Image 1: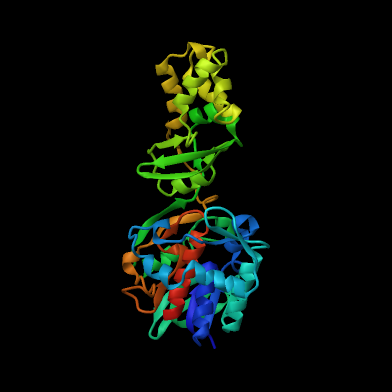
Image 2 (image 1 turned 30 degrees about the horizontal axis):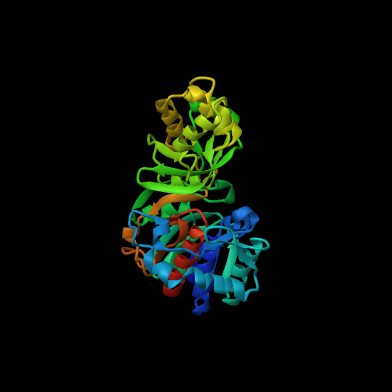
Length: 392
């Protein structure tokens, strides 16, 4: 018989969590996953060690057109709750930096844990079936796949966003939402490297692979983490974080020497080491290759002794307030998550059920809630999956 209480589309982080919780409540649950393996994004995350949550998770770590929407789910199933589940399976973990938690071993441990939770809850998993149509029936929903037709009282869409397409992600969830009349906040790549135009690339091409601690600002938002120059532009944690806030045509203002009074330092070096070249002086503050490029870009005399106060101020500004306009992003191919998605105004923040279509739920990345870098997006998957699993 192909009738189930709950059909869940997508066996990623949110879908697996929802299936386990719904199954524990005695529901007959079917998980349909178009890829050949479940939890692929979990498997590849965190360099294969899965940054599965963050100790400091709070609503402030999430972007959405409705910033309040995430509160109920995050408080209903917290990072502490997920850590307790991980520890109940004897999975060893460690905190890396800034509250980011990783497996000591392999991310496969998290996938296996969730699959075991689903098995114990008697949730059925079907892999590799292409979904061709979803429709509403008299007593629920019909899902048509190349493995057959499945009917369910409730339908949970946990298909993720189009980020990392090689993992099998697509825009299927948005199509289903629009089919049933729900609004979509325009999706865009997030937590993604930024690219330079040809002029900037030629100026900074020798810096590929150079990393510096930086404070990267876009408008009123800033992140204080590592920045990495690449052969396409900029990456590193600070850039991935700010990419969620950056828009085409906007400038970034970057402090390449945070916590250092560069101007005071330059004036001191002018009197202490007057014969030194500017590039040599700057190499005490930033990597040598970056120091050379800044010295060349700001120009000036051969020796620091001959620099005026005004010229020193220009050099300091080039380090402390580097204003740069990226051309774009590397796109969904390398984006860790998708910004935007199903409009939260169409969903219940407590249950994740559609306000207009009873029995239809959306959870995880497909929803317009996007976390910062550092385990927050996985926590959103666990929390939203748990909330829907409690109510389907």
